[in-house]
Image (cartoon, rainbow, N blue to C red; front, side, top):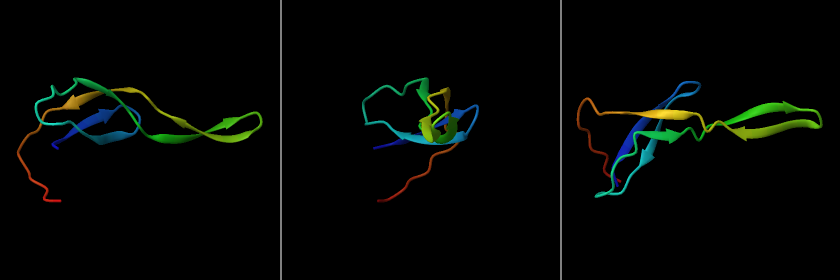
Length: 64
């Protein structure tokens, strides 16, 4: 499954696997987990910032 890179404006780049034959989404939600203060203590939240797809500048293969 090919991996595509997206750029979160808050957390930088992250990779998403997109199956062959599927269209690559132009935006994806950032999956970064962050700590945020809450009145009852600390808790985790997911960023979900809209992050644009970064078209590849070259081709690389990763054998898994």
